[in-house]
Length: 487
Image 1 (cartoon, rainbow, N blue to C red):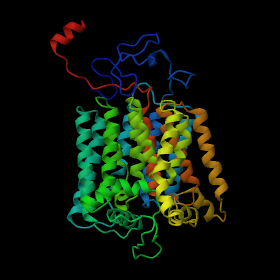
Image 2 (cartoon, rainbow, N blue to C red):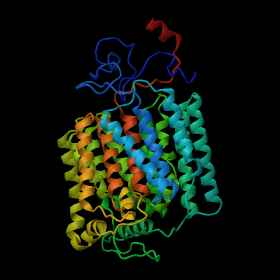
Image 3 (tube, one colour):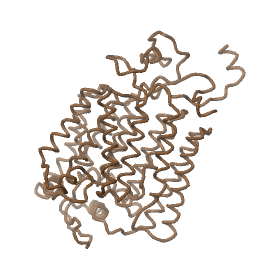
Image 4 (cartoon, helix red, strand yellow):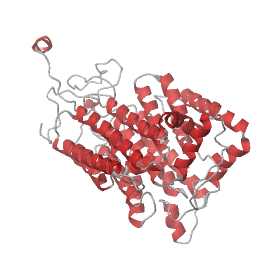
């Protein structure tokens, strides 16, 4: 199939996420074949969102992919630390996300060749950032080789428009999971405060201790010690992996793999199934895994909630979003947007918040001072760092400290923009979440690789879940009897 054609042999396209392909397009707004009542988008000319319609602006998929790549490259250049090149790239990526929201953009009704090239290039740009920084030995070589080969193959497969994309996607996910296992083996005891903190928390849970009262240290200067800086959900989710395999990073790797599979399933049997593998092919993914940041748990829970919503499993969506809120403090920035997420509903958003709160309260009651010191005061009292990958640091280097007021104004402005301009469906919620997280990162006093990876991952999820995106599906051979009945 030529790259400029991008149409399936059956000439049919899917009208919505998770639905069967609809029949030939007409000028009416008839419901799709699944009977869900979703209008046929073919009657709308490309343009901006119309009230009550899924009309789209051509090119948002290109903007989102370019923003995803820019943020990934910027965060990878110096391992998430500040540099002039890095801050320019993440600012450009954030600007592209904001532009999509401000223009009320959504992906075009057909996947363009330009989007294909951008997607392939976005993955290929991460080729030089194949593995971690503390590892050594043959296992590290294996991790790097697998990552490099998978990156090149996926990029080439997309650009050349080769068949069996779904099979290649799942093979890529499996191989990248193997690369993650090899990376963990190559770096068994990294001198990283987050890894030590999570390992200690897992050991403490196994012995019935409160994770906020455990004392620990990495032994390295300037690293955190004697406190748990996240919300308790992250420790509880990773605890089984520490108990079974001795390392919490296997839990983070599992979260990444599950997220990739969920996104691939959303676009199953379509040319966009490769977007699922992008979760594992983000620039320097193995570095983020080695550092043990818990953001993959947050992204995985959000994607699980979105997946449950589009499948009509709202009870599971409530649980998944509650898990998201129970893992990390920044996840609560998504709650205001969830109240406007019509596919989810404000009541379910409130129920998720209540569930997360009910899970957290016992930890507060049993050790209020320790919880406040670790989960709240530690983050509020952090001193601004000159290596933070944010415009806050740019201001510091020019003699001005913006302060909390600027961070609050920027974040609230991003929330207002998302609520005002974006549709209140799953796509709008995820893109709005990406905008809020990216703007928050730019204005925050400490933003590093993991925070930017979360913002980029939310934008990727928005592209996958866009309901008005009628991408071409791969041709499925039909038997002569089926063809005779259809004729």
